[in-house]
Length: 277
Ligand code: C2E
Ligand code: CA
Ligand code: CA
Ligand code: CA
Image 1 (cartoon, protein in one colour):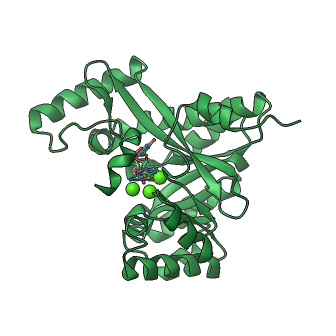
Image 2 (cartoon, rainbow, N blue to C red):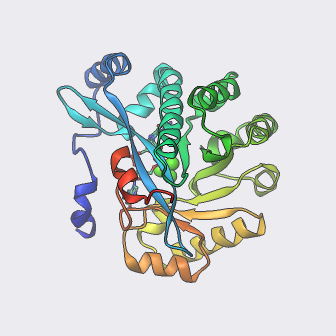
């Protein structure tokens, strides 16, 4: 009931428990989606809690299906992971996000950092670094404006290999963050040796932040851990003013959520920004 007021941010209500036939149909559709340009990116503002201003955006993939309407990434990303299409899709996302970030700059808007979600299979791709470099080169975007969101699980599977890959990306000037922090398992020793610039507190801890002493304790622990490790910390899924206030009072640096904005088309991000004088 609490979320019902925020339903304008939700985009689909189709049943999540897709049967095999349903899955095959979606897989087939996804192959076409890339060719027929049914994919697009929505951008969600990231807000600096101290200044209250937008400093960046997260690129979130959307699929405009010709019959079904908008299909949720929670439904098709796992499928794309399974059948390998995520490599091509992920490359498209990277290129499109870099192109868009550069286009905003070329339009005279103050530069924004753009973060892109990386899936496990993409992170394992031996050509990841090369693909990222190519996307930056093709767009003309300076690497310092690109951030990649990784998850704990994907970087903790093979710590040495992850460190090597992350160092290569960091050396290019790209920022790295750990998404959904607290939901996977992290070795704190490994975390310390990763070149990570921010931790993202998972929305499951933010959801009941004001009613759950446990979630408050976890949130404060993540904030403190981030700062001890010289990282910034961002909370996602912030929907209420009370949540914002708690996070601000407890030293969280940045926030993202429906309280500030849903993920929106690129044109709406441009409207939120004032041109540089
Ligand atoms: P995520 O990376 O954790 O992204 C945050 C999700 O929370 C997004 O869902 C976003 O729309 C939603 N969200 C933002 N603010 C709020 C809020 O205040 N309240 C609530 N309840 N939700 C909020 P979305 O766009 O449906 O994406 C779901 C997941 O799909 C993402 O979770 C990410 O894991 C994956 N995904 C999306 N785009 C991409 C992509 O380009 N590549 C990859 N590999 N994964 C993607
Ligand atoms: Ca994310
Ligand atoms: Ca997340
Ligand atoms: Ca998530």
